Each structure stands twice: as C-alpha cells, then as structure tokens.
Length: 476
Ligand code: NAD
Picture 1 (cartoon, rainbow, N blue to C red):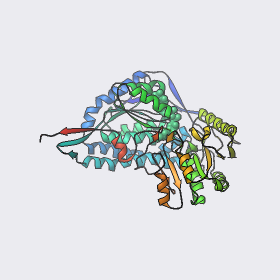
Picture 2: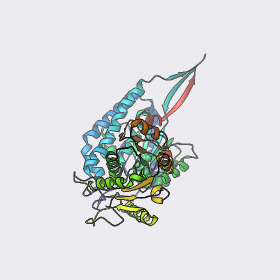
Picture 3: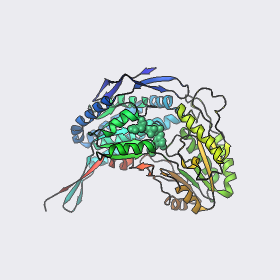
Picture 4: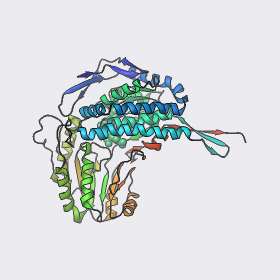
C-alpha cells in the first residue's frame, strides 16, 4: 500500500497540517491500495499563497520558455505512460487496454498539443484596432477541481493551457482517483518547474475544495464535475467576481435517422456509450431511432453489447471493468430499477449484480427500449452503462427529443449523407456533435451548452480561457 503523507506546495513535498487521510480503493478488489492526505483549509491557503507568490515571475517569463517546460512535462509523461495507465486503472477501474489509450495516451496527447499551440501563441502579434494595441495576458492564480472518470485527462486539459498562458495553479483532484495527480506532480517536480507554479492539495470538495474557491487570491476556478458542484462553485466564486469555467454533466443524444446504416451506427453507439462503463460525460446515452426500425436497432444493440467482455481491469482482454465506487454502483442499479418502474422495456442487463462477481463494483451493462424521453432515466445523468433507446416518428421529432434535455454537452447524428447529418447537427443544442462516426478531436473546442457548462477546453479555445484582454490606447 502506498502512503502519501505530503502535499506538493511551493515546489516541495510538504507534510499536511491535517491528520486525516483519504483511503483510495481499487474498485475491482475493494481493497485499500493507498492513502492520501485529507488536507486542511490551512493547507489550501498555503497552496494559494505559493501560487500567488510565483505568479509575477512565471507570467513574465517568455512564452517559449514556459512552453519548453510543457514539452518536458509531456516527454516525462510519455516515459511513464504504462505506470499512468496502471495507476488510473487501479484507482478508477478502467481495463488496461482502454486505460493505455484513453487514461494515459489522451492526456499525453493533450499535453503535447499545447507545445504547438504555445509556440503559435508565442509568435502571435498583438492585434491592432485603430489606435489601440490589444494584448493577451494570463488571468492569474487558478483553482482546478477535477473528477474521477478520466482523471488525468481532465487535469491536463486545465494544467497545460494554464502553464502556456502564464497562470499559476492549485489542483484539487477527485478523492476517488488522486493517485495519478501525484504522478503528475512528481513529473512536474522532476522537470524543475519553478516553485509555486503548480501546487497539489488533496481533500474533500466541501472543505478544501470550497476553501480554494472562495480564496481572495484566486482569480479563476475551472471545475470538471457534476452540475451540482459546478453551480455551487459558481456561487462561491461570485462575490469576488472570479472567472468560472465549468465542464459539467451530460445526457447526450445519438440521433440515428432512417437512411443511416444501422449496422455501423448501432455497434459504434454501443461501444462509445459503454466505454468506461458509461462513466463518460459525453456518453451518448439516449439512442433516438425511427420507431419502425426499433426492433432492428435492439437486435444490433444487444448483439454488440454481448461482444464486450467484462472482468479484471488488469487483463488486456476486457472492455468493461467495475464502476468506480460502491456508491456509484448503488446509484446505477437504483436507476435500472427506476427504468423498470417507469415502464421502459429491459432488453439487456438488469439491476442484479452480474453473476460471478461477488467482489468489485461491477454492474450489468443494461439497455432499455421503448423509453419515453420524459422518463427520469432519459432526463437524468446516470453515469453508468445504461442505454435508453427512444423511438420517434420522423426527423423533426428526433431533433425535438434530442434537444429536450437540461444538458447540452455532446451528441451524434447518423444519416444517409454527411451533408444531411451536418444539417441536423447544426440544430442540436450541444457543444460537440459527431456525424456519421466522426471521432473525438483533442484539438477541437470541448464544452457544454445549457447546464453542461460554460467555457471551452482543449485546443486554442482552451488557452483563451486563461487569458485576459488588455487594450492599450496609443497616442494618435
Ligand atoms: P463531483 O461533482 O462529485 O466532483 C467533482 C469534483 O468537485 C471533485 O474533486 C469534488 O471533490 C469537487 N467538489 C464537489 N463539491 C464541491 C464543492 N462544494 N466545492 C468544491 N469542490 C467540490 O463529480 P464526480 O462524481 O467526481 O464526477 C462525475 C461528474 O463529472 C459527472 O456529472 C460528469 O458528467 C461530470 N464530468 C464532466 C465532464 C466534462 O468535461 N463536461 C467530464 C467528466 C465528468
């Protein structure tokens, strides 16, 4: 068992002032695999003060020199890729084959992407507007609050652009999956990032998280998490007018139109939805299909689900692992029971524990058909392997149902032609749409409409979040 006693503050590993610890549980074995500090609000204050003290010199360093650090961090992450994948797999439950690609590969790609973006930013000439010169400057000290489902990706999506911009930061990772953040802090320490630029404090959202959100020395808060936590954090930051960037929940629609190739659309929809056992903010959890073809869709969906093997996350052969925690498992199984009570037709899975899994937070991947979009299973984010197939009559109804959601994070459209799919995609109220199988792009702006959030991460748009704009009026 790995015991972390220290926090990373002001460029050193320092003991927490708290005696409390957070136990990190492997969701496949239910064993405690590590402890990390449940830090005090005093630790949070020390971390913000360290970030504030580092801000002037870091923000004034040439952009290219800051980007050099990002390049070194990306290289060190790549060297430790297998360890990162194994760390996240052990604390979060994603099986190794996917963890290598997504939990390690994706954050490395994103960190690397900010090298090129940063070099472009370094070369950019300030805009001229009449007699004004418009310059971009780092916003200041940032608090980062992150979740457990793609933990390092969500951290890097904030840390990388903030470093390029010239911001300093305090990270409070999820208490379920803090271990990957310690690996990142070790890497940052090993490349000699100036003291105080990056600080790591672990602890509960309600205490340490809130202390980091109300702190007068913090200029910006970026949270990835639930819509409830995002709303609370906006309240906490409002009195001191902090910039708030929120990447929150989703209930995304996969609109499959009559002319689409079902043999492609349905298996792709199942694989995407079931990745990470549905614990994905962008998961396409509502499959909206022509009523006349629902039976075909159900057959294809059940077959595709049957091909996904579940089991030990340590094995390279499994696609589905356990859910992240006992409480997440309870929540998901309660939703499956609710779907049955609401009158949806269960066509795969169910609320019982899967056979042969006495240990580990495994649930049966589940598909409901004949779901009405007004049901709670279609409106609320379940955050587990539960798909709702919603039959509709015609394209207009498909679009109306897709948009009938409090969320607007992602979506997909499958149609006879790309032009047709794009025309429908333009009518969806959501931050991303994949058409006819278009893949996730780590350089494209990522974020939500409606209660899915404010602001954008990744690519150049992700860097803009960390910049203030200053107009310098020249004499004429
Ligand atoms: P969560 O909201 O419970 O926790 C997220 C983080 O917020 C944790 O670090 C937690 O400690 C912290 N937190 C909670 N309450 C807080 C408070 N009052 N003050 C300060 N910090 C607080 O979410 P989770 O269960 O870790 O993650 C799952 C949720 O995240 C889902 O709703 C999912 O959709 C969302 N998510 C969104 C995206 C996105 O990019 N839009 C990505 C991944 C996950």
